[in-house]
Figure (cartoon, rainbow, N blue to C red):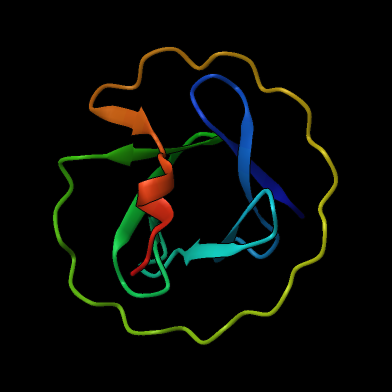
Length: 106
């Protein structure tokens, strides 16, 4: 089953086919759910964002949870199709939409 993630405006930004690894809508591996919860960690171990319902948002104030290790490259999941538009999510306290610099793992 594919899980689609959107920004707060309702635009599709990412997806997961295994509920562990997260890919951008372009098919780039951007992170994984290293701790088994809603937090998404980049491949190098940095916090990327948190899944809130079907939204992937970034909390600027987020505790450091330690280095989770490297999971190994998950391979390419294939194109999941287009999920459409999710609609406006409203305000999520303390959260903002992901920016290109959040994906920068360098």
